[in-house]
Each structure stands twice: as C-alpha cells, then as structure tokens.
Picture 1 (cartoon, rainbow, N blue to C red):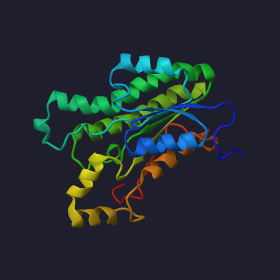
Picture 2 (tube, rainbow, N blue to C red; picture 1 turned 90 degrees about the vertical axis):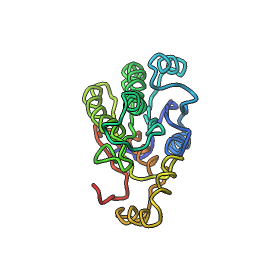
Picture 3 (cartoon, helix red, strand yellow; picture 1 turned 120 degrees about the horizontal axis):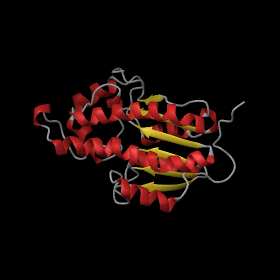
Picture 4 (spheres, one colour; picture 1 turned 180 degrees about the vertical axis):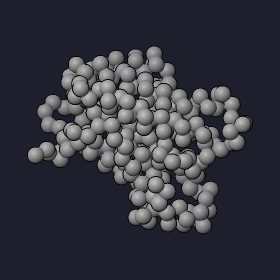
Length: 237
C-alpha cells in the first residue's frame, strides 16, 4: 500500500517559483516542513521568461527533484476590449505564465531523467478551465495552455519516472492583485462570488499548497497529466 507520506530517503531538492506572495510562499513553506531543501524564486531572483537566465539559475542549483511552476499572473494588466490589446501586452502575460513554465521545466528535466524520478506541478487557474473573471484574454489563454502543457509533458516524461500534474486554483486572496480585484467587487459582488462557491468561503494559500503536497507525495505516484481544481466547488465549473 502506498504511503501518504512524502518520499523518504535522501533530502529532496525543490524549486518553487513565484514565492513573493501567498500561494508560492505557502507551497515553499509546506515543502520545507516536510524536509525538502527548497529554493524560492521570484522576479527579483531571476527573470523566468529569459531562458539564458533560467538555465544559469538551475545550473547553480544543480539537480532538482521537485519543480513547482507557480510564477505568473496578469502583469499589472486590466481588461481591455480585444481589439485594443497590443502585441506587447499579449506577449507579457503569455511569457509570464507559459514561457516561464516551459523554461523551468526544460531546465530540470535532464537531471530528473538521470535520477529516474521527478515531480513537476504547474499552478494554472480556474481561468484556464473556463473564463477569466478579470477579462484578460492572454491570462485565460496562457493558463489554459499550461494545462495542455501539463498533459503533453506528462505523456512524454512518464517513462522516465517523472510525473507532471496541474492545480487550477479558484479565488484566493494571495497577492495585491487579487486583493484589489476582491475590493473592486464591492459588498454585493463579494457576496455573490462567495455564494457561487459550494463551501461558502474564499480559498487560502494553504489550500493550494496542500494540493501540491499531495502531488509530490508517495500517494500520487501513479497520477500524472491531471488537473486538480481547488476552488471550493465553484458553481462556474
């Protein structure tokens, strides 16, 4: 019977991106609490959209057992009609969410293949499964692409002992952007959003971290290419 504990043996090395705020920080803290050596990455550490910078960073870290691609977001953007979106606006959001995931995954895979073991968890969004509440086209598109990337890499890498899974969080007050979004809804809008969540509460960063904990534990060793919505049973889905 598979253990529900984390993998035992030598200390695992993990890299978690996007750790400047709630979700990434909670994920890193959880992995540290389970005995992993965790390298935290945010935009001040390395530009994850720059492949050369990413390769240099991972060369310094060495072999990585667990990668959590959490970095991304709306890059300070708000909704505009699609005909008003510039090339630069589109590329900035796609790069932050999808290209960063690709760059980091490509960097860790050789070491995981050599070890015959690896765990990759991509943090997408409910927007990738449905629509973006912010109305940002590039955000919904890049988050959906992360889900497709998860499935494709799971198919490719499973034979090497590497699993790739994805979490699609619901609404979590985890950073200044989501707090600003929440406040913009006003009292009635906030009540309507919570009413659409089956468990009648917003998510916490720790809720998402717990999902990552499952995907990197022994209990999920025969699970790959899957998308786990952690959204309190949001009625939209």
